[in-house]
Image (tube, one colour):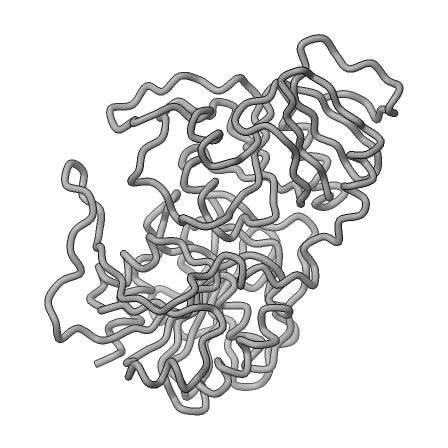
Length: 394
C-alpha cells in the first residue's frame, strides 16, 4: 500500500486502479470489474466465504468493502446466491488477484460478474494494513477508481472523497426499497433443487417493511411457517394494516437509522400502540429501538463478518441465559444500550465490544436483533428467532 501521495507522485507501473482517501492517502492496485469511479465509505468484512452475498446485500449501499480473507473468487458466481437486485456495495478491495472459479455451482467468474453489476474492484492492496487503519482511525471516506490505461487525476479524486458527506444523516433505504407491495414467492434453498415454494395457505401473514432487505430473510420467514407480503420502506400504517397482518417484520438496510426513522419510526410507533407483533433485524432493530424511546449512534468501525460472538443476556432466557451465538453482522450504526428506557430489555450483547445486539419490549410481542440470523453468509445459530416470531403469531 502506497504512502500518502500528491498528484505529482508517479503512478506505479501496471497500476490500473486506485483507492483515494479524503485525507490524501493513495493506494494503487490492479483493477477488475467495472471501470469508472465511485465515492463511499470504506469498511472491512472478515467473512471467509460468501463474497457474492456480501456484494449484493443492500445494507452495503454507499460502501466499499475491504475483504480481509485474501482469496476471493474461488467459488465463482451464480444466480442463486444474489441477496438483492438493487444497488448495494459500490466495489471491493482484495489482497490477491481474483482466482478462477473452482466450484461445481459456479456459473461465471467474479470479475465478469462485477462488470455486469457495475461494481469496481481493486486487487493487490495490503488489506491487513487497511483494516488496521480503519480500526485505529475509523471508517474513512474514499474514492475507488478503475481505469485500464492507469490514468488518474489524484487531486480531483481526493477532493471528491473529502466533499462526500459520509453515511451519518443519510437515508439510503428509499433508494434500495422496492416501489410496490408484492407477495413473496420462494422458500428455503436445497442443493440441487433451488428455492422451494412458499407453502400452503392458512399460514400466519407477515407484512415485511423493505428498507433494503436481503432475500434470504424472506425465505427464512417462509421456512419458519409464514406467508410474506413485502411493502416499500415508506408504506403507511394504514397501508400495512389494510393487508391484515398477523405480524410485521422490519428489515435490514443501509444508512443512518435516525434519518430513515423520520418517516418509518412513526409507523412503527403506531404498530406498537396497536399491539401488532414486530420483529426487526439490523436497521429494523435500530428503528424499533428508536420507536421505543432509545437512541442510535454511528460506530467507529462497525461490525461486518460471519464470526461475531453474541451473548444472550437480560435474565429472560432460562437455562440458555448466557449462551453464545456465532453470528453474521453488517452494521455501522448501533443502538446505544445506555439509552434504553424502562420497559425495554437488552436481550443480546456483542462479546467483541459490549454493544447492544438485541432488545425486547415488555408487554409487547416486539423484539429485534442487530445481527443477521438468516445466515447468508454465515452460521445458522440464530434461526430460532424466525421460529420465535412466527410461532407467536397464532
